[in-house]
Length: 231
Image (cartoon, rainbow, N blue to C red; front, side, top):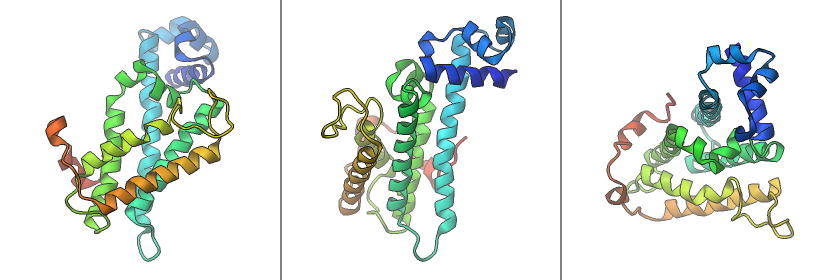
């Protein structure tokens, strides 16, 4: 019953947006009574808190699967770590875009547009940052990036630079596209690949500027020694 409620809430949120969905709507979609919903969740916010956490964990699982596949591949002909990172991040950009194309109110889209969702999943962004930093740390260990750079700082810079590749896509201006419309998938993919190529080329060619003085020491670096390990 609990999973039916979560599935119904996820479906309805993508179709109408969380603000418009009521507990009654969720109960109707799940095929149960409103009272049965309240036996599992105290209110609407608790339902969507759980939906958000479950769904975003799935997104991180996809990034983790790419990381594990890369480590297992190894050997001659395997891509460099920065190239593997670029592929993983491009795939993530396209996953979000595919969700936005189908349902603009989906969890993947609202993560970047809804303050309510963002404030309820800070660990998602932290784990996403840690995942990127783990790639960068591995690249340093293999001699593919300068050893004096900070993987944590560089991961944050990559996330900042990639912000425009996610909803509402305002910086991605495709020639001939409607001003308020979505870019085409091929154009977004090409933009993501070009941006990541520039970023990673910069990391390969330069020494880092220490950012810890600006952000304080959050104790992130020790977590990288074991690679990306979602909790």
